[in-house]
Length: 97
Figure 1 (cartoon, rainbow, N blue to C red):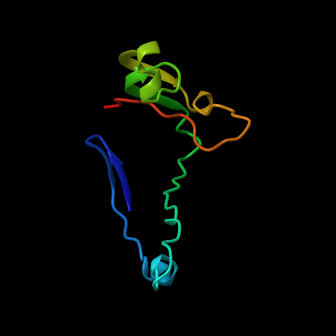
Figure 2: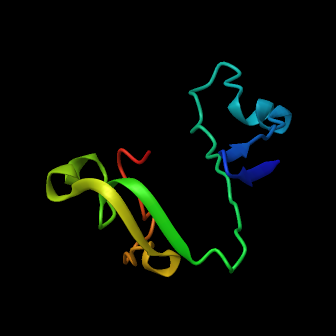
């Protein structure tokens, strides 16, 4: 359940991990890799602007904080992804509040 209003955004969700019980069980063997879990949320196309208070203006992970400024930033959503050759994640913003 997602709710966005003037107070902010509230996210409530439940996850049934019962199907992973066999996968994560070691049964006396070496532990398997932990399953990846994530959340995918689709916003209406009318949400075209993005504003945050944090490090920026570029994507910023802890190792890039020194090259960024802490302030309020605004950009279009289409400008957020970074097109990496081998994508794993992109668009991180540190110290966002």
